[in-house]
Length: 324
Image (tube, rainbow, N blue to C red):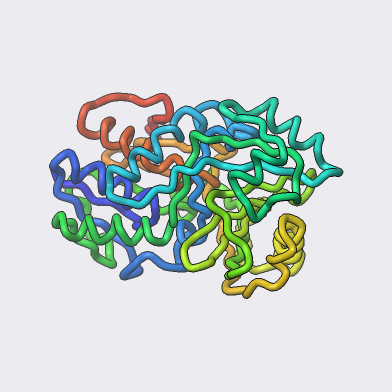
């Protein structure tokens, strides 16, 4: 079967990977020659954390997200399976208890157990939660790996979509609002720091009633800071959000106060009104969209379901038929 995929972000690359695995001849259309800062996926945290996301997300996110770590590993992407650490400052201890009530698969740690997991946080927190079943990856490395692997498997990447030939999988994110009018943009901002004075082995979530933060370690002393979630598709960097990110990082560990500020990024994530992803079929086009803040977590499951719907005729729960 011939298929074309519109968009080479995380959703498009995952869909193309699933189609190739089923023997399809795939062409991917994307205006950019390689993954980069033009795409929302470039700015992701890369946390494969279905249970922690369950604090605020609906049950499908938790269930489908549990496929992600295994899927990425099967594609040859390096996945760190060190779990997620969740902490709170002393004045915010109630936040830790509230989080624990809403999140499954966690273990409570005292100060000594926390120090054993992350020695550089020793003495800074007297309690924490550890969700051992979670993982993380480097999103930029993962995107580049999928792109290279698809090219090696004979997938053609072109800049212009051309005429339809076979099924179309529309994975354009917010650009698909021309046919999915209920999509909205949710702004997310991040910062990248480099520090030789602190080492972390796993993502750390610092709970706060107003300014929650996550810190994701990457190679070469890099740390990705993220958390902002603003109802807007405005892509301007705001001073307030950056100050909140950096202040929260400093509260997590003062060493971040001396870190090098490497990068500040912003983009708008595509979301439907219920913040759940959706497969929508319009004739010979299947739209894979609305991954919200769960791109690397949910794209593998959405890609599998989209390929199943196209090739096996299954109708996933997230599938919507649009006869308009």
